[in-house]
Image (tube, rainbow, N blue to C red; front, side, top):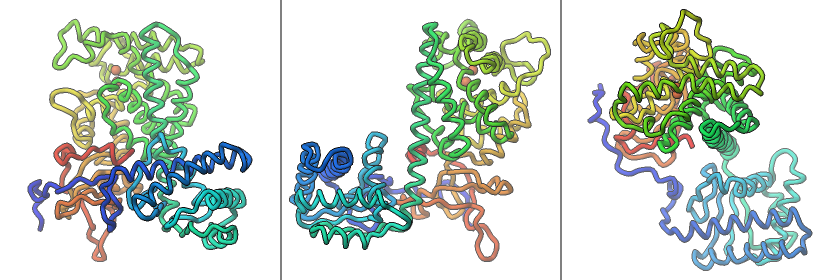
Length: 500
Ligand SMILES: [Fe+2]
Ligand SMILES: [Fe+2]
């Protein structure tokens, strides 16, 4: 039997570089090719766009075709050939992967979408096609897109462009997993955009509160609505984003994380969409009072003295006052005011503000308090550092002095699994992985879906697969089981890289 010791897992020898060539292909370490590849794709996109928007003889079209022809020639001259593969790993130009970022998502995404419509997975060019062939090729691509019905037909497309005199551009079909991959990527980008926007809206909200100005309500409601939608439709991805650790924007990312976790708990409890919106609003505002606490105190490392503590604790009632400033919302700010005021009280009222008469804490306050505690403990900037998510969950469950409602803690554990998203785990196969999602089968709470990062030999995997720890062998034994949780920093793993 394998001994479940850390020493048994060798430190992987190399990190998986997302820009490396596809497995099985020669690595190309030419940064110039990446630039040339990007130029080519952007010129291709520009041509698609200009032919969509303008008549074919328009100077915009001619200019973009010039650019495209030049970008093609540049690659042909330096590399001897041009092969663009649109695979599940996205764009490879002569085997160099072009990173898809938010900035180029629209342009590269459009090229991908239009090529997919015609069933194209590969474009190969050995001799420069010249302006005329490019023009016919792109125009035909657009026509195919317009008429696309049912299955894409790459062979038909090739025949048609040959009849149009396009002899130097060869197209081939993509691999089968592309469509699935594209869907996943689109979901990730939507989640990331929601997350980023929410962080910036929160920042603006806090700034307004600090200056005593009325914040832009429309932006706040839109952000909360987007997070609600993401939690309802894309929960795994948006919760994965909460693993981001941006210490410069800590207060804002913390706020957004609390909003995401609160909504995930609320969803688990079966709240309606309208109630979820109110809960999201309360969560986004829970620490708004912090904007009125001196930033030096908030950022002070180590212990606070009594006066500093008193000032930090004032964020509860200061928050309630700031929320009151948003009274145009109807009854939502009332709930947000209560949550801002109550979220550190604890169920036994041993927290703060102190000296309360017996009262019933609002369910929103209890949910937000739990989401807040979970996020703070897993992302803490304190000297002891952040705790592993599974440790935090256990403490929340076992330590009643933390003052959370056990029914809600149970809901959070059921939601996250015993090993929450982003937990770094070592398996009995001596593989190392990251928890990607709780198992959809709720009876398998300790068997999450894991992304395998490193194999038993200690090598990083180029294309980290997802595995279900509930999978069994023919004799009924589990294929893989977690033997321990480890610190991702120890293996130089940046958890958020695998979620964004
Ligand atoms: Fe707080
Ligand atoms: Fe908080």
